[in-house]
Length: 151
Length: 403
Picture 1 (tube, rainbow over the protein chains, first blue to last red):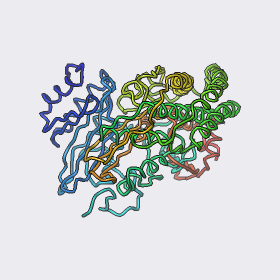
Picture 2: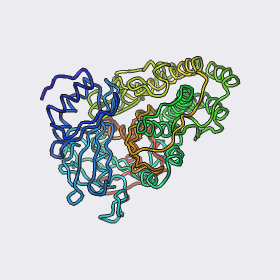
Picture 3: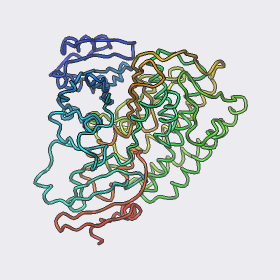
Picture 4: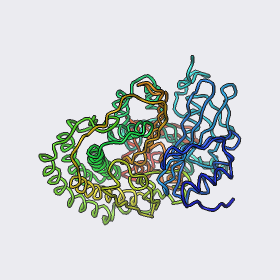
């Protein structure tokens, strides 16, 4: 896949709009943008961003999971050094069936954070090469997730 | 982590678990090295031995309290997390920090970078058995720590930062000559010691061409900080997304392309020298005025804060819910990003070089010591203390052969 390298944050957001058809685009200021994408598109989004890593000096800084009670949110924070900005891709994951495709085989940097989210929130990353415990001790009880909100 | 595991070769290899205690520092994590003779064929990393549930605690504390909580995440880069957290809160609130506070943040941050890098350089040389230079580096670190104590009241955990600015002002009239004197005193010796490292035959033999991280791998593993800059990636939050007063003060980032342990060491030495210049420019330009922005209440909003800690980019994500207690705080320290990149660095190297390679990313977890060696072929296990393991590193011997 080859895409034209965007020369500004606006062009990058436009490219994402064309490629991913996001649900919502929210530009907070010139340094922070939030894009809500569909859960099925996460691998496509990762591939799109990976191609831009070298030309835009970008990287996946981390991902944050948030328990919003009705659903989970996973926020992939991409640092775009070229524009001095953080592009956050937001993904909703239903609480009843907390599953999402893994991007760890596309972006190696996502490997640890997906395992961490799996530990702390119980979200299953399908297709992860090695979804073992990372943070919690080996004798931690199954099905107890410290950062989930109960009640 | 590499998808293509050399399965046929793995069968013949010996599994060498190092940990859960750090082979280089007094901090716990687990490395499983698969070795074929002396050569490392694959590596697996397990962390979490020092998981303290900071993010869980943060959901039950007020924002003013969290500043002190995150300050205790790390004992060496102890101003990085508070600044990063406060910047995330300020980003969520669209709060402007007063000029003087921005300059004070730069001053404290750069002094911290100097002492952190000097500490690391000393430890790295200690790992390869060069204790003379270790003593030299730590000798020049001491006046910087003393300076921080005089400025903030503490050698570590300065408690200077709060959302909207800094908590204490500094007496520039009294402190500026002192700071400049200390910087002038340490600048030349550090440059000299750095040169000694770069030119010393023995240091070169242990560091040049060892633990190479290619630019492609540095990109793929999303590495940050001196680890990435030693591999030719020109990334630095201070330049790319200038926070505090870095836009006015300016930073000349140092990039080396070799990617080996030597490059990562020299990048840090050069950064110390650059930090000295940054502090001088910062002191010259520091304006007068208020040190804290006032605000009434916390909104319902989310924010991302970024900070270039001594070890690389630090990132905090905070979601505020309109009360003094945040709904969620996510912390990503730089070592978390750099740690997976150790796998390509370790593969193909010898066991004796493992401590210095693992040390080369300047990892930061927390403490104790034990290494065990497992010979899969013969099914025997040998447990070593960290100092014994480091001894093998210094003497370049395979622990399995000794027993």
